Length: 110
Image 1 (cartoon, rainbow, N blue to C red):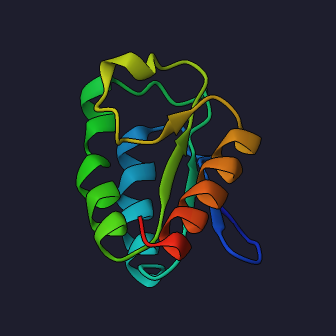
Image 2: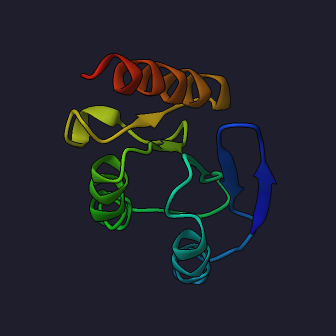
């Protein structure tokens, strides 16, 4: 797992070969970063099913309740297979844009 801290967000990237190993490591790291915006970059070297991606849905909901953002970056997944409020984008730039837009919305009281 690779972690990069930026001014208003943290990028957590997979470098494991197994989803279960990555997911377990992510859960530990996420507990330390509950008050931070998180981008989770899941590289294509990990074969991830739709059901496995849905494991992050509860985390996304908790982050939203806490006033922070959670975005998954993966270009191999069909975003139409997931709820509309579950942020999955194909590029890191789009993930950063989503966080910026959500920060603006929170600042405006939406």
